[in-house]
Amino acid sequence: MTQNCHEPPLITLYPCFPDVKIMYQLASGTSSKDAIAAPSPVQALLPINVRERGWTWWLGAAISAAVLVAVVFELRKVNFAGVRAILPTSPWFWLVFAISYFSAPAADWIIYRRLWRIPLSGFSALLRKLVGNELLVGYVGELYLYTWARRRTGMTSAPFAAIKDVAILSAMVANAVTLVLVILAYPLLGALHLGLETRTLLISVGVIVVTSTAILFLRKKLFSLPRHDLHFVARVHLIRIGMTTGLAALCWHLALPGVSLHWWLLLATLRMLLSRLPLLPNKDIVFAGLAVFMIGHDAEIGTLMTMMASLILVTHLFMGLLLVGSQASRINRR
Image 1 (tube, rainbow, N blue to C red):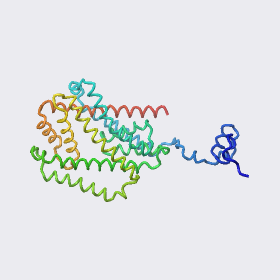
Image 2: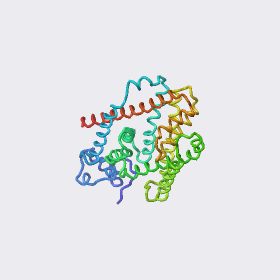
Image 3: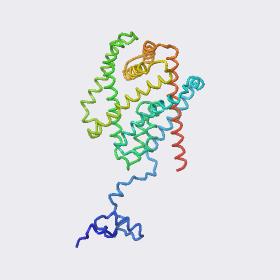
């Protein structure tokens, strides 16, 4: 005779739901060998509590130590007195700057929230990714994120595929935006005579086109995520690029309000274009020439750009020290 699965008492759910039987026996102190020995599907899905310090732990610790060394090395280059003297006092500037700084890890969190259901506590790992990429070398932040996610099997069992796809899509979206901007800005860049050789510019554009075309041609072998997830990630990257460009222009406007915001927007867009073009020498000089030609205020523009670069570097250093310190304190508590 079979047991009715719809009887209300909890004890009658045993034959239909063996996990309920195990939990009931454990709670009542009457667990049997069979109940304890038989792994349930629910137990199999629980995160594994890894106490051993495997290679992912040591690699993550090595990256954190490298960030600390980079912070100490870069601190020697910062003229804190000079930066403090030219910092804006407007609270709106600091609010916009904070939003601009955290917009990249926030976009990453939105992406991995969808892919991994990453918790809010994972935001610190994404900040480490940003700081590692900025203070060390490109994509070392992605390597740290992989080691962090690899130790959390309850969140994702295959982190490499998602991290790879997100990084490739980030480059592809940036390349697509760069190509559009080149087409729109080419008449302006040619008319300003800023030392940009047409041959160098065309080669840079060719590199972008070839790499992007190769990725599109091999997309079925390169990408692992479903198509709808890839489209979602691409949209988030596109919004992030537009948001960071607009916020940079707004920061400059708040620091130097005498110049109209639309000029800053145009300048921020051209700066992003120059930064994405490979093989282009003297990018800082070209950008400074663009800024002076379009806006004027030679001394003020130079001071503003120096201030922003120093402020971003100091913020990276502060966040690096804060994140490494928090990780060291957690290790000590354990």
